[in-house]
Image (tube, rainbow, N blue to C red; front, top):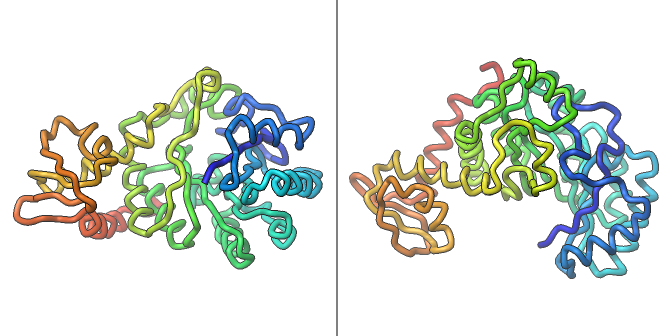
Length: 327
């Protein structure tokens, strides 16, 4: 499935989160002509019948004329033969789900960011954890797919809180998740806090450690991880002033999880699909392990052969002990 995005930066947002500047993140402006923008994006991203039009960058269902925009967007989607529409919004702005479904919406991406209220409050999200739970349930009951966004390294966040958020979201059984370590963008409140020395962003090493454990939780829960890390190109990267940016952050985080697997099992040899070789051993060359092609990921450990899935189950169980909102 391919995403064909058009952006409405901060459109419909009635409050501004400490970390957010969608224009700086995307270098896009809201389209003057929705239809023209859709057709340009379809051509640019090589859309096809397996594509979904994505209405990104703001709180879509709080835009003043969002119903009109959605109707026009759905008309274009039908003309182009695309499979449907996905949109992003806040959990407290999910509304009129029957209208969403009737106008081609197949997936709604909910910006939860955290399932710990103190983190939401410190980031000026101005919604509650319960809003997230309600939004996911309403959409699932309507037969609309749900993706949930989580962020790490927000003000007041800790690894325990990010793990707690992951377990809570996994329990909601969304169709997918996205995980974004917090980047400090220009012209945000977080930038002012960062420059004043009141906010310390995560390093790549810290972020990859946290996110690798979050990946473990979602893999173990059989929940699709749609994206890890914010997309940045040369233009948008100019607006990042701090935080764990890396163009291959997703690969780094996944490799960090495999590294834990290899070290904790005292692996002597590792087996796995050839297309995962770079993640399993490519960034872990210092462990000096032999890699052998196999459909299943496994290792020859200290005493026996240990499959990744078996290890993952036990490892995730151990993470529950440190997943709390009060640490």
